[in-house]
Length: 631
Image (cartoon, rainbow, N blue to C red):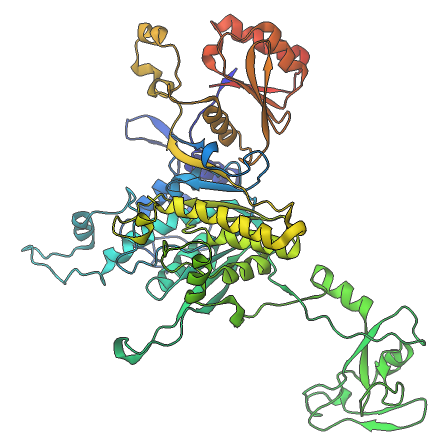
């Protein structure tokens, strides 16, 4: 019977597995910090495997900063943390498919790797812009001032400073890059193969963000750098030049298509072509007679002999050789053919069925311009959106709901049940936009909001209004916005999902002995009643197990009493868990007869090894396909 790890996945090991599958010859061994052998990569050999020339360490284009390597290591390193459910702060816990997660998004993204890998259709984030006062993420891979100066060589041999160290110098950007890089790496793993990420940013870090995204997502995945007008021009600005625009950076998987409804062409239905709607298009092309001599000819109307010569500077779009076939297929329309057409020369006829076949799922949709419509609003509109729900300015500069709604619509027109993630959720504008769009187009999109519970300044309006941290503001906004949207939708909004499950990042559910039993004496182990922390509930353990077993955290779950023990059922029989002590054989058989896909028990539920073996034998006999583990 296997024991659950109860920690996030080791992404370094997973990456080595992927490389080993492609290049087994580059796998070698190395000693870790404790002198033990571990798998490693021969990077020199790997570079050679990926090059047609001899690799001798030649210079190449590279984007780096002090602390980059450490940030990658920290992003891949497993953690012993968990997400603890908080039902009392949630809304519609039993029915909702939405999540609100409190905690540092680096750790949260690690914990979501299993449950939501390749599951997110769209990510939107509005990270800190690194303006000098908005950077509150303090990761342990952010290099110290002393380490940075030593590695960069900021002093000469006599310890004289070589240049002035102010916020315009590298470390100011290095900390920000080190914060963003691993988070985007983890986020990439969550995107579907037709997924997309939109990132709001201003001029301070837009160049560095583009370089990071080129590395993480790939240069070929860059879609657009979209300007968003945040305000009208201000007069009191440096040099008299008002910076009124921010940027929304877009990277996407190859299969992603951005589109909006509209642009449906006008089709005609005529008695001579029943059930074959058609439209017309200009039959000329902007090419000269010298460029396309085969297209410089006179078209003759076979019905009345009228001639239509080509223009020297604008030839026909077809050649003289293909004209007979187009005439036979009713592809050429002449001015006299239909009274309702206002044309003076032949036109080309397109049939609707051809358009539908060519456009596929895109039929009836139009591409999206980087010139955003005015309806998306500016910063002042975001402030107004927030003010309509709250009586105070509890949050500064939230993005407009219509801006987020626009991008969600663009990204999910074909998938109205899509999952949207925002791991810098702030005041939860993204959640607000998801609910509003669902109300407008009867969608069933779900959201996952992640936010660090950053404390509100005691002098701020938010604190005076009773909000201790940003998460309290975000959760309250979702409650108020959801209620308002349902009221406005009336009967049509009865089935809208405006709820959310609150999960909070915390230390592991397990005591230290669970991970390092070798450090404890046998007698101490025998005296310990449980390797699970005393303050953890069954629900805490259940969500820890769901996370490790890669199950979506929005799945329904119920509890039943079977032979005097409490048994939890996740999505019916996807997972069955029992964390009670002294589970009877009768209860075990009852669970086995339900044939669950997975089942987990507490390690201390069984008195000894023979009891565990007996459980395994019961399942082998009754439900051999069930996977059994213990914590």
